[in-house]
Image (cartoon, rainbow, N blue to C red; front, top):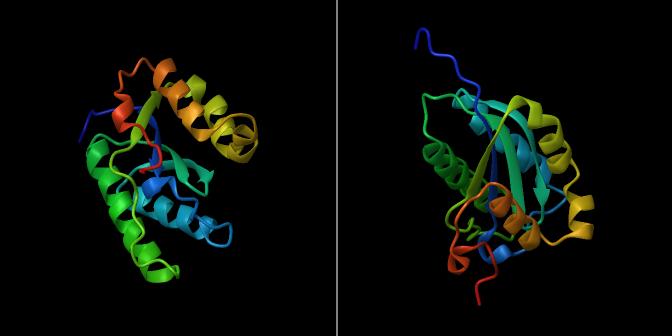
Length: 153
């Protein structure tokens, strides 16, 4: 689109169904590359991807030609298929419904990049659930505890 200029930086978090810790160190880098390819093939800019065995953080520049929800749906669908096809013993891997996304200004990116890059260190000090609640609160997002990412009983 001529004369359209944007700078939209998004951090999204997706969580494994039931918060199961199944993203293995042996293939997590391949998963992150696969996610990066999906983002890039849709015309967006990958900044950093990292996570833990039960969740993944994505930081990317979103172009306005595609909605965030459409991109997140494609990432979750395509990666679920990829994991189920290529990573045994999975044949029913899935992500939890929904996702969390937060926007940042360019000046905030170094802090967010550092946070995502150092996920393991952060989770030694604070649980994913506590960090997730803190992200929702700092961004002023109203939430219903019934729908938060936590283990399904």
